[in-house]
Image 1 (tube, one colour):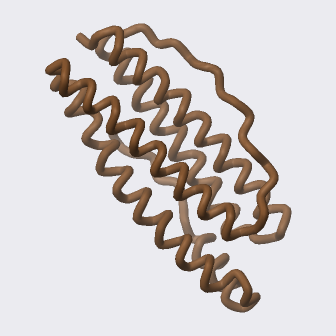
Image 2 (cartoon, rainbow, N blue to C red):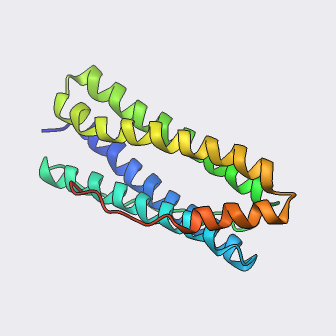
Length: 169
């Protein structure tokens, strides 16, 4: 049902999503070491979401009878300059993921693969939300990073985030 090229691109995206999960887990560990458990929680939830995204793509390839090839996942960085640096890197990473998904959609459209295009619409909508949230948090962390009281409140805000599995995952 999908071409080998589209299957390859989705397999690569599965590895990208798994890498993102590890990258966010590394960010979570950095904040945990600084006793900013709320922000650590935010990135831990991000990590779980990325794994859910990989699972959705895995299931799609399985549903359309494509070969699933699990790619190598490089070790993510674990040394960061500061909290602002981490949030900026998270936003940059989300933009990279968006470009990758758009590339798959473009190729699927070029091939007339409407099933894949339809499937990926969920990811396009998700990336709009992910980039908006990441951008908002970059702004907020820049405002509060030099103010311990404000940073504490920001940490408390992000502690409230919980992982909610997508019903269609």
